[in-house]
Image 1 (tube, rainbow, N blue to C red):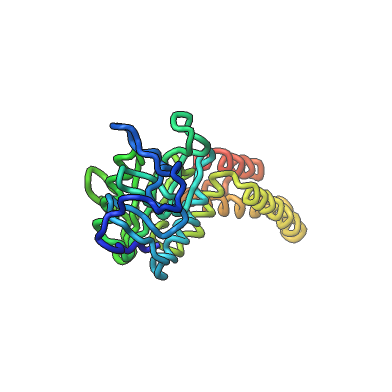
Image 2: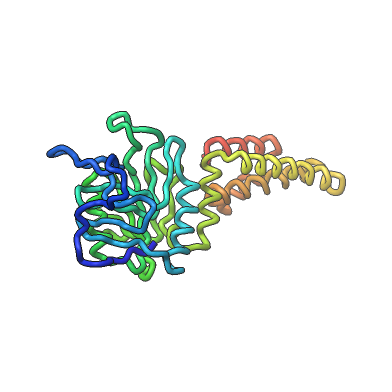
Length: 288
């Protein structure tokens, strides 16, 4: 959502309708619990350093980008982690707000008996003020969030909060994190046309059973085509062609460049050699 400052007044106390258990004050020197909220959850209210901010329904530029962001990040979340949308976090004594998309460790933190703090947080910035997103990044990282990333819609830029400033990421570069199954191309966070490819690559990296079945089916179809072509031009050559096509499909999904030199080398392989190459690509996900 596109946060909008409401009034300059400072929100000093929660609504009388809120449960008092949700608003306990931390002991001196102790950071507030991440779920000890100052605002009423599931409402539009947020608090950024005492300033009351309303999270308004999104404009298309924000809403569309947020939808794609959830789509891409959700597919990349590694086993043992969980992704969330608009997760409300008490990040500082006077800050209680949500980021657009975040990833945290799954389960309960034994130190706090509550959920784990998010490790990776994303914010889509369209109408949001630079001051708000900067103060939120400062509070989140001070609270312990490892990385905060902003997608600046109007500039078509991705930036990460680092060393007290927003550092623009190279759109042709990659973005890696322990919570994700594979390095993301930065442009996959910017270009909607890249989203489907990013998700397909992530599911392949996760050994998604549907894609595994599709790969197996491709091999079987290749063999069937080989048998059909074998009746016309010889079974052996048809089977080789089917295997070569299967290798090309796997290389495309794994972003392995199939150079002219590699194609020439493949042309020298027999059926057994091509089957061994296909098995190696699926197992090691790289060209030897």
